[in-house]
Image 1: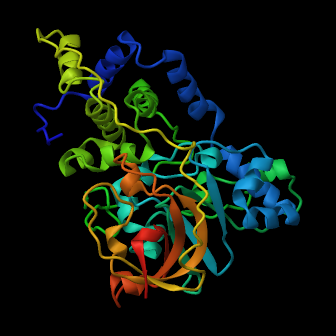
Image 2: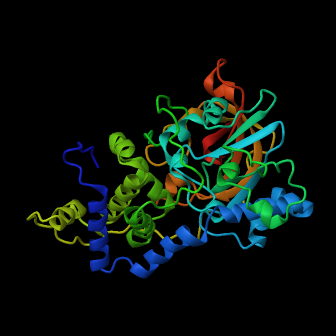
Length: 199
Length: 220
């Protein structure tokens, strides 16, 4: 497909409507299957899955050991598996070790644990810069890491999906697993933020 | 193919347009439908995930950047369906023009021409009998090669030396799988590169980990 100038490029919503009308009219796709995919990733699968994995790892040392040893099997214990989760490797953050994940080549992301990626993860600025100047970029995004913190960036170039186990914040010792899961954001599980202590 | 998609380390892209964690996966019906149709287009066109990615990567750089993520996915669906002659070239545009009231002729429905391709299993992971060529701790160099078609050998690693940190499950080789030549399943390695090896002495200090297929690597 060659580049078309703004004056000739048809709007995205119109082209989408056109493709859908062709595919449905010729029965090339099943609209019920379309709706199922949309619902799955809009309602059923999202970062709460990953948050539950994190909360369990924080409160159950044996689970954490299994998670770090075999991420795929450990998250499957909680029922999380499926497309874009064929093989999951969990990387652990620590006071002097910070991990962040990217897919420079497209937008690979651990769907079973985090759902679909946010727009910023899929856009050129993050993809191009996190593998070149992570400390500066993370600071721009609100995460200041001290010089003593080693940074590791994981470029997801195969079907392996990387997932960050963030540090448990201080002051959460009395919280239940469910309450802890409520603290964990997708940003922390991608590695662009830490989990904030409760207010 | 050395495409626009291979943008690790490219500069000038500006700041990250961040959205808060409650930003939803889809912002409107257009995005919802593109998501579902693009995924289903693999099945309809008789292709696979690697050809899906190549159908995105090979878009003209200006389209790639200007159309945005969902525009790329729609273009991808159109590419896959056109390549397999499920829809004619120009069919989507003609239908779009018709939908907005223009008097255009739609191209005839072509005779389908799906690739001669059948996966040996679901997903991309396979069992490989040959032992891995490399082991954890080995120094390896990413080959300075320029595959003509699809590849996952990021340009910023080519010719650079790193250390194997993990031996990962064997997977189909995207370079040949995307073009229905062969699955070519092989061991995959997570290789760590020192940032200065990649970006020079002035760069920040960090470790870059990337998955590299065995064919991409040579001993260092």
